[in-house]
Image 1: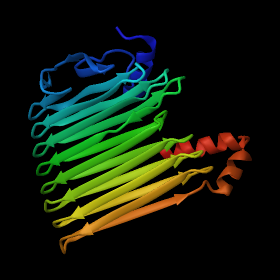
Image 2: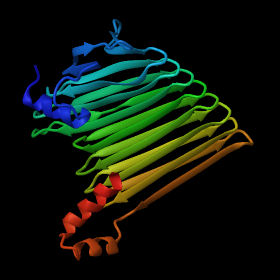
Image 3: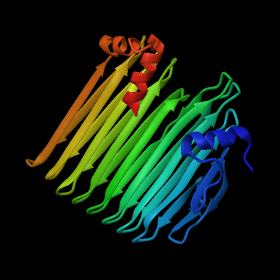
Image 4: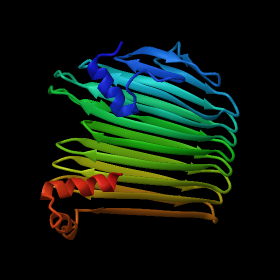
Length: 306
Protein backbone atom coordinates (compact mmCIF):
# COMPACT_ATOMS: atom_id res chain seq x y z
CA UNK A 1 0.00 0.00 0.00
CA UNK A 2 1.11 3.55 -0.74
CA UNK A 3 0.59 6.47 1.63
CA UNK A 4 -0.90 9.84 0.60
CA UNK A 5 2.48 11.42 -0.16
CA UNK A 6 3.54 8.55 -2.39
CA UNK A 7 0.22 8.63 -4.24
CA UNK A 8 0.69 12.36 -4.89
CA UNK A 9 4.18 11.75 -6.27
CA UNK A 10 2.88 8.95 -8.49
CA UNK A 11 0.21 11.22 -9.95
CA UNK A 12 2.74 13.99 -10.64
CA UNK A 13 5.36 11.87 -12.44
CA UNK A 14 3.20 9.24 -14.13
CA UNK A 15 -0.36 10.60 -14.20
CA UNK A 16 -1.55 7.60 -12.19
CA UNK A 17 -3.81 7.43 -9.15
CA UNK A 18 -3.03 3.80 -8.38
CA UNK A 19 -0.88 0.90 -9.54
CA UNK A 20 -1.49 0.55 -13.30
CA UNK A 21 -2.73 -2.43 -15.23
CA UNK A 22 -0.44 -4.27 -17.63
CA UNK A 23 3.35 -4.14 -17.51
CA UNK A 24 4.81 -1.96 -14.77
CA UNK A 25 7.62 -1.61 -12.26
CA UNK A 26 7.19 0.58 -9.18
CA UNK A 27 10.19 1.46 -7.02
CA UNK A 28 9.66 3.15 -3.63
CA UNK A 29 12.37 4.32 -1.21
CA UNK A 30 15.19 2.27 -2.69
CA UNK A 31 13.34 -1.03 -3.12
CA UNK A 32 11.27 -2.68 -5.83
CA UNK A 33 7.72 -2.20 -4.52
CA UNK A 34 6.03 -4.25 -7.21
CA UNK A 35 6.15 -5.29 -10.86
CA UNK A 36 3.99 -7.04 -13.40
CA UNK A 37 4.54 -8.54 -16.85
CA UNK A 38 2.21 -8.49 -19.82
CA UNK A 39 1.94 -11.01 -22.62
CA UNK A 40 4.57 -9.17 -24.67
CA UNK A 41 6.61 -7.27 -22.05
CA UNK A 42 8.64 -8.97 -19.33
CA UNK A 43 10.47 -7.25 -16.46
CA UNK A 44 13.37 -8.99 -14.72
CA UNK A 45 14.98 -7.72 -11.53
CA UNK A 46 18.76 -7.40 -11.82
CA UNK A 47 20.79 -9.65 -9.55
CA UNK A 48 24.12 -7.79 -9.60
CA UNK A 49 22.92 -4.22 -9.02
CA UNK A 50 19.74 -2.20 -8.39
CA UNK A 51 17.45 -2.03 -11.40
CA UNK A 52 15.56 -4.07 -13.96
CA UNK A 53 15.85 -5.50 -17.47
CA UNK A 54 12.83 -4.93 -19.72
CA UNK A 55 12.29 -7.23 -22.68
CA UNK A 56 9.73 -6.26 -25.32
CA UNK A 57 8.90 -8.98 -27.84
CA UNK A 58 9.38 -8.25 -31.57
CA UNK A 59 6.19 -7.06 -33.25
CA UNK A 60 4.59 -5.72 -30.06
CA UNK A 61 2.12 -2.99 -31.03
CA UNK A 62 0.12 -0.33 -29.16
CA UNK A 63 1.28 -1.33 -25.68
CA UNK A 64 2.54 0.84 -22.85
CA UNK A 65 4.36 0.32 -19.58
CA UNK A 66 5.09 2.44 -16.49
CA UNK A 67 8.29 2.48 -14.43
CA UNK A 68 7.98 5.30 -11.84
CA UNK A 69 10.38 5.83 -8.91
CA UNK A 70 9.21 7.45 -5.66
CA UNK A 71 11.34 8.69 -2.75
CA UNK A 72 9.58 9.89 0.40
CA UNK A 73 12.36 9.08 2.87
CA UNK A 74 14.65 12.04 3.58
CA UNK A 75 18.36 11.49 3.06
CA UNK A 76 17.98 8.46 0.79
CA UNK A 77 20.46 8.23 -2.12
CA UNK A 78 20.33 5.59 -4.83
CA UNK A 79 21.65 4.67 -8.28
CA UNK A 80 19.38 2.48 -10.43
CA UNK A 81 20.21 0.75 -13.73
CA UNK A 82 17.38 -0.03 -16.14
CA UNK A 83 18.04 -1.67 -19.52
CA UNK A 84 15.36 -1.73 -22.24
CA UNK A 85 15.56 -4.35 -25.00
CA UNK A 86 13.03 -3.26 -27.63
CA UNK A 87 12.35 -5.95 -30.24
CA UNK A 88 12.15 -5.39 -33.97
CA UNK A 89 9.04 -3.84 -35.50
CA UNK A 90 7.60 -2.75 -32.12
CA UNK A 91 5.43 0.30 -31.41
CA UNK A 92 5.36 0.97 -27.64
CA UNK A 93 5.18 3.77 -25.09
CA UNK A 94 7.23 3.82 -21.88
CA UNK A 95 6.30 6.23 -19.07
CA UNK A 96 9.05 6.78 -16.50
CA UNK A 97 9.77 9.49 -13.97
CA UNK A 98 10.95 10.19 -10.45
CA UNK A 99 9.19 12.00 -7.62
CA UNK A 100 10.93 13.03 -4.39
CA UNK A 101 9.28 14.29 -1.21
CA UNK A 102 11.91 15.51 1.25
CA UNK A 103 10.60 16.76 4.60
CA UNK A 104 13.91 16.46 6.45
CA UNK A 105 17.35 18.06 6.43
CA UNK A 106 19.17 15.31 4.52
CA UNK A 107 19.85 15.37 0.79
CA UNK A 108 17.70 12.95 -1.21
CA UNK A 109 19.08 11.80 -4.54
CA UNK A 110 18.02 9.52 -7.38
CA UNK A 111 20.35 8.73 -10.27
CA UNK A 112 18.66 6.66 -12.96
CA UNK A 113 20.81 5.15 -15.72
CA UNK A 114 18.58 3.99 -18.57
CA UNK A 115 19.97 2.18 -21.61
CA UNK A 116 17.81 1.53 -24.66
CA UNK A 117 18.61 -1.05 -27.34
CA UNK A 118 16.13 -0.29 -30.11
CA UNK A 119 16.01 -3.01 -32.75
CA UNK A 120 15.46 -2.62 -36.50
CA UNK A 121 12.19 -0.97 -37.48
CA UNK A 122 11.04 -0.45 -33.88
CA UNK A 123 9.21 2.68 -32.73
CA UNK A 124 9.29 3.86 -29.13
CA UNK A 125 7.93 6.85 -27.25
CA UNK A 126 9.64 7.53 -23.92
CA UNK A 127 8.13 10.00 -21.44
CA UNK A 128 10.11 11.01 -18.33
CA UNK A 129 9.00 13.53 -15.68
CA UNK A 130 10.90 14.73 -12.62
CA UNK A 131 9.20 16.38 -9.66
CA UNK A 132 10.23 17.40 -6.17
CA UNK A 133 8.43 18.66 -3.07
CA UNK A 134 8.86 18.82 0.70
CA UNK A 135 8.75 21.18 3.65
CA UNK A 136 12.22 20.49 5.04
CA UNK A 137 15.65 21.97 4.37
CA UNK A 138 17.00 18.94 2.54
CA UNK A 139 17.75 19.14 -1.16
CA UNK A 140 16.16 17.10 -3.94
CA UNK A 141 18.76 15.88 -6.44
CA UNK A 142 18.12 13.98 -9.67
CA UNK A 143 20.82 12.96 -12.15
CA UNK A 144 19.32 10.99 -15.06
CA UNK A 145 21.54 9.33 -17.68
CA UNK A 146 20.02 8.02 -20.90
CA UNK A 147 21.97 5.91 -23.41
CA UNK A 148 20.29 5.07 -26.72
CA UNK A 149 21.54 2.58 -29.33
CA UNK A 150 19.32 2.67 -32.42
CA UNK A 151 19.36 0.04 -35.16
CA UNK A 152 18.44 0.47 -38.83
CA UNK A 153 15.16 2.33 -39.56
CA UNK A 154 14.22 2.61 -35.87
CA UNK A 155 12.46 5.62 -34.38
CA UNK A 156 12.53 7.04 -30.86
CA UNK A 157 10.76 10.05 -29.42
CA UNK A 158 11.79 11.32 -25.97
CA UNK A 159 9.76 13.80 -23.92
CA UNK A 160 11.42 14.91 -20.69
CA UNK A 161 10.13 17.47 -18.21
CA UNK A 162 11.38 18.98 -14.97
CA UNK A 163 9.13 21.77 -13.82
CA UNK A 164 9.16 21.96 -10.03
CA UNK A 165 11.06 21.17 -6.87
CA UNK A 166 14.40 19.80 -8.11
CA UNK A 167 17.31 21.62 -6.47
CA UNK A 168 20.09 20.16 -8.58
CA UNK A 169 20.16 18.04 -11.71
CA UNK A 170 22.65 16.86 -14.29
CA UNK A 171 20.96 15.30 -17.30
CA UNK A 172 23.16 13.32 -19.70
CA UNK A 173 21.85 11.82 -22.94
CA UNK A 174 24.03 9.89 -25.41
CA UNK A 175 22.73 8.34 -28.62
CA UNK A 176 24.13 6.37 -31.57
CA UNK A 177 22.07 6.07 -34.75
CA UNK A 178 22.38 3.52 -37.56
CA UNK A 179 21.07 3.76 -41.17
CA UNK A 180 17.69 5.43 -41.44
CA UNK A 181 17.20 5.82 -37.68
CA UNK A 182 15.48 8.91 -36.24
CA UNK A 183 15.73 10.39 -32.74
CA UNK A 184 13.46 13.23 -31.58
CA UNK A 185 14.08 14.84 -28.17
CA UNK A 186 11.86 17.44 -26.51
CA UNK A 187 13.02 18.78 -23.16
CA UNK A 188 11.24 21.20 -20.78
CA UNK A 189 12.90 22.62 -17.67
CA UNK A 190 11.98 25.33 -15.18
CA UNK A 191 14.22 26.37 -12.29
CA UNK A 192 13.61 28.84 -9.47
CA UNK A 193 15.18 29.89 -6.18
CA UNK A 194 18.83 28.84 -6.25
CA UNK A 195 18.29 25.65 -8.24
CA UNK A 196 20.79 24.40 -10.83
CA UNK A 197 20.12 22.37 -13.98
CA UNK A 198 22.69 21.08 -16.47
CA UNK A 199 21.78 19.29 -19.70
CA UNK A 200 24.27 17.46 -21.93
CA UNK A 201 23.31 15.88 -25.26
CA UNK A 202 25.68 13.91 -27.49
CA UNK A 203 24.28 12.36 -30.67
CA UNK A 204 26.43 10.38 -33.12
CA UNK A 205 24.78 10.25 -36.53
CA UNK A 206 26.69 7.24 -37.87
CA UNK A 207 24.17 5.75 -40.29
CA UNK A 208 23.29 6.81 -43.81
CA UNK A 209 20.12 8.94 -43.91
CA UNK A 210 19.71 8.97 -40.13
CA UNK A 211 18.39 12.10 -38.40
CA UNK A 212 17.97 13.83 -35.06
CA UNK A 213 16.03 16.84 -33.78
CA UNK A 214 16.88 18.02 -30.25
CA UNK A 215 14.68 20.77 -28.77
CA UNK A 216 15.15 22.28 -25.31
CA UNK A 217 12.83 24.89 -23.80
CA UNK A 218 13.55 26.30 -20.38
CA UNK A 219 12.64 29.05 -17.94
CA UNK A 220 15.08 30.29 -15.30
CA UNK A 221 13.69 32.35 -12.40
CA UNK A 222 15.07 34.04 -9.26
CA UNK A 223 18.77 33.20 -8.78
CA UNK A 224 18.70 29.82 -10.48
CA UNK A 225 21.27 28.68 -13.03
CA UNK A 226 20.97 26.58 -16.17
CA UNK A 227 23.49 25.14 -18.60
CA UNK A 228 22.60 23.53 -21.95
CA UNK A 229 25.27 21.76 -23.99
CA UNK A 230 24.61 19.73 -27.13
CA UNK A 231 27.03 18.01 -29.50
CA UNK A 232 25.71 16.52 -32.73
CA UNK A 233 28.24 14.61 -34.83
CA UNK A 234 27.39 14.08 -38.50
CA UNK A 235 29.48 11.06 -39.46
CA UNK A 236 27.58 10.07 -42.60
CA UNK A 237 24.96 11.39 -45.02
CA UNK A 238 22.51 12.59 -42.37
CA UNK A 239 20.55 15.51 -40.94
CA UNK A 240 20.69 17.03 -37.48
CA UNK A 241 19.07 19.98 -35.73
CA UNK A 242 19.68 21.16 -32.17
CA UNK A 243 17.68 24.03 -30.69
CA UNK A 244 17.67 25.76 -27.30
CA UNK A 245 15.16 28.47 -26.35
CA UNK A 246 15.21 29.98 -22.86
CA UNK A 247 13.35 32.67 -20.94
CA UNK A 248 15.48 34.36 -18.28
CA UNK A 249 13.93 36.24 -15.36
CA UNK A 250 15.03 38.09 -12.21
CA UNK A 251 18.72 37.35 -11.40
CA UNK A 252 18.96 33.98 -13.15
CA UNK A 253 21.79 32.79 -15.42
CA UNK A 254 21.51 30.67 -18.58
CA UNK A 255 24.34 29.25 -20.70
CA UNK A 256 23.64 27.63 -24.08
CA UNK A 257 26.37 25.91 -26.10
CA UNK A 258 24.90 24.04 -29.09
CA UNK A 259 27.69 22.40 -31.11
CA UNK A 260 27.58 20.63 -34.46
CA UNK A 261 30.39 18.70 -36.11
CA UNK A 262 30.27 17.63 -39.75
CA UNK A 263 32.57 14.72 -40.53
CA UNK A 264 30.98 13.84 -43.87
CA UNK A 265 30.43 15.96 -46.97
CA UNK A 266 26.70 15.10 -47.00
CA UNK A 267 26.05 15.84 -43.34
CA UNK A 268 23.42 18.60 -43.01
CA UNK A 269 23.46 20.12 -39.53
CA UNK A 270 21.80 23.17 -37.95
CA UNK A 271 22.03 24.66 -34.47
CA UNK A 272 19.99 27.46 -32.87
CA UNK A 273 20.00 29.15 -29.48
CA UNK A 274 17.93 32.03 -28.14
CA UNK A 275 17.85 33.49 -24.62
CA UNK A 276 15.81 36.48 -23.59
CA UNK A 277 13.37 38.00 -21.16
CA UNK A 278 9.61 38.20 -21.55
CA UNK A 279 8.76 40.98 -23.95
CA UNK A 280 7.13 44.01 -22.34
CA UNK A 281 4.44 44.23 -24.99
CA UNK A 282 3.35 40.66 -24.20
CA UNK A 283 2.85 41.56 -20.55
CA UNK A 284 1.01 44.77 -21.39
CA UNK A 285 -1.35 43.01 -23.78
CA UNK A 286 -2.33 40.42 -21.18
CA UNK A 287 -2.62 43.01 -18.41
CA UNK A 288 -5.08 45.00 -20.53
CA UNK A 289 -7.25 41.87 -20.48
CA UNK A 290 -7.42 42.04 -16.71
CA UNK A 291 -4.46 39.93 -15.57
CA UNK A 292 -1.99 41.13 -12.97
CA UNK A 293 1.68 41.29 -13.97
CA UNK A 294 2.39 38.06 -12.08
CA UNK A 295 -0.56 36.29 -13.67
CA UNK A 296 0.54 37.49 -17.11
CA UNK A 297 4.07 36.17 -16.53
CA UNK A 298 2.73 32.79 -15.44
CA UNK A 299 0.46 32.62 -18.49
CA UNK A 300 3.38 33.32 -20.85
CA UNK A 301 5.68 30.85 -19.11
CA UNK A 302 3.05 28.07 -19.14
CA UNK A 303 2.42 28.64 -22.84
CA UNK A 304 6.15 28.61 -23.59
CA UNK A 305 6.66 25.29 -21.82
CA UNK A 306 3.48 23.65 -23.10
